[in-house]
Image 1: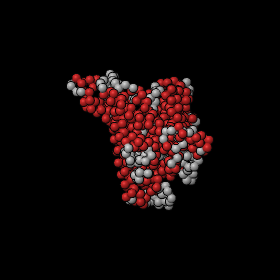
Image 2: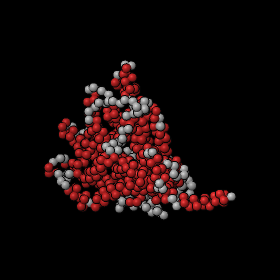
Image 3: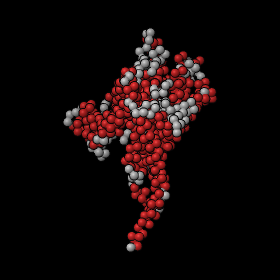
Image 4: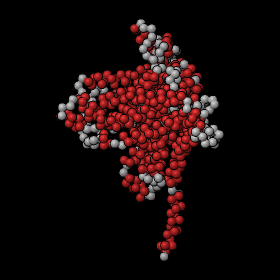
Length: 573
């Protein structure tokens, strides 16, 4: 009787107690933020593609965007470019991964660091460097060729389809390297020994045993490279537009010229978005086949394979890749930044520090862009890490209702190319009631949406590795979920959080595709300003700005290495 009478009262008491739990409100706010960051712009993109500017249901935007032969050719050109970049990235990345992970090649650590340097280098700065190096008229390589051979013109022309594919591949191949080394490091040498016992040579073993076992990871990385190439804007804007190569990303810009055609831009984005989703589903299926790669588990022996004199060939190839991706581009940027006129060559009379003085003390636009880039990147990295650890903890410990839905929302931006996400964010937040267009807040919102999956993925893997008993001990002593998160989980995952913070910071400093449609005069970042300066031909100031940005990023990466370990950005296992 009394127990039955008390049960409803107890339930009423417990309900308010749960509603007063700070953790419940924290995770509710996170879910609302995810809806605003991810679901709203993507749904708005789809909505706009199916409506006219007046708000009426219509397929008119699809007919206009996809019925143009110029637009269709742009889509086809992007597919061709994606295929070409993927092939070149495989040629660059797979041999380096084999050399570092499986061979006795000397200086493997140095080669690994050179790949890290290629990753840190912003692709738009790499494109500028190669314009200075291999421009058809004034490019330094062509001028050296003419001077030493006496020919009328040099052989290099970066303003071409293969020139564009080459530059993009130089700064995307680290992804192939990361996936391939991660797979190769799981393969036991015993499998290769077995092949050798049966008479297989070293290269036959590599071709028939080692590489096939790593093939799912290599194909998975190749898919990501392909998707990155077709959605990239910065390098195509610098090289493809002058070369009169029409691509999907550069064609999207035409919809934002007067008169503004957001609905057509949304419709034109849909085939790229659909292709991205399908390719990522294929990649996930391939990478899910872990047994195909890690045949012998982690217990097998792994030792470098003695490849004899071929180790010197691999070392020379690795040095060539490092020269093309890092040394030559950085050298030409430094020289141009110290020159009165970069086209006059390296001469004492042509050297000056005026370009650096200009960007720090005279060129307010450049100084503002540098400050904005660092400020927005730091803000984005901080927000992503804070949201990432909370979302990972809530979903892995199943604190929130529907944890799989929450995790899907957090990871969904992976399937949306940056330039398409920017269109969705523009449609959702540029106008009333938010009116965020041209503000730094919209840039941070865009960057956070785009790179939140990096933080969530890193934190989720780390939370899974934690023993829940550590958290339960705090709970038994009366600590809430927020206390557990702040006092136990976050301190234990310090290296993971620092690594994710710096990785997101570095990627944000390089991001252009998302920022190009969203930045205004007061919120311009270095990547967007690069396009403006290149159109003006002001390469000396541009080079000085690029060198300063690379120096800042390098210092941050060095700090990250001290805290989170050398391989926090290019993990090999």
